[in-house]
Image (cartoon, rainbow, N blue to C red):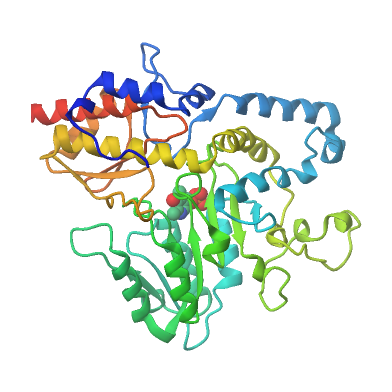
Length: 432
Ligand SMILES: *Cc1c(COP(=O)(O)O)cnc(C)c1O
């Protein structure tokens, strides 16, 4: 059972260090490069939900690809140590493990919003009477723009076609019951449920299985944007029965800036002729790809959605991180994550409780209600808080008008990091 209850004896740097000593994943921290302050000390990096840190292995991997380019030039497509023509296949299995997908259900390609559009091409097929898309009220703007533009593309008015889940006033998160009731209320007009999981602003984790089941019962497709889920929460995409999912790999999966993204297509949709798709030559069977045939012969997996020969440097930059995920494994990372984030929450309540409101749902032992990220609302002077955090070397991020988000990442953040962060917050609270 993961420890989520703490007592006053845990409210010290010494206690935080003891947690680190007992942490079997603590060694992974040394595999990453931390940004440093002017004294050369690592910053308190809590922005891994925005851009994951660089695994030390990434530089070596990129250098190796440059070496291969120099040595093989065009022959590198087939003769490099990791032949470029197959580069997307070297990351697929690890990504599938992280996503709880079967091999063949995940393909690495493009960037996130592009993949979302490609999935919408296949899975948002509105009719005159069934055309509505349900998303979160606080969906990531790119997702809002994507669904709005898809609705317009099909001749619908987004103001009518896009329905948003409404949390109670003053809240960011919703109860599972509310979510399900609001989905059900759309009725026969529902064509697609597309939710960000976890939600990027509240950190709320939705019940993917219940939502998918309900969406399907209502005759809709169900897809997820897992930008804040992949590498953060335990995922079970295949068994949860989602139709599709998309995610970027530069947040929790440390692929580096502009890194490669991924898509999941449930195997029941593979090889179906009645699902339209935008196609390119990377979706045709590998053995025929360079025969330059006139007609595509689609790969009977999620790879049918791949279009172009992949960006090799981005693919390679992702591999070192995936090796770390395979070594650490998601269940162990999740277990540490629950303890690390619970500790942070407890310290903030204990030492700055009058000042900080946690907008993210509380941890539940029965189901995943959140990932590692906490969204904090500061009752006084959020900008002053932000300023002090940055002066003291804590990297977080700010969303208008008053939300500070931070993500203790189990792969590289320590209990000491979390304790030091709470000290800065408590110090600021005492001073205002
Ligand atoms: C980070 C994020 C994006 C960003 O999209 P890109 O196409 O990678 O720029 C989109 N949607 C969600 C939910 C995100 O968290």
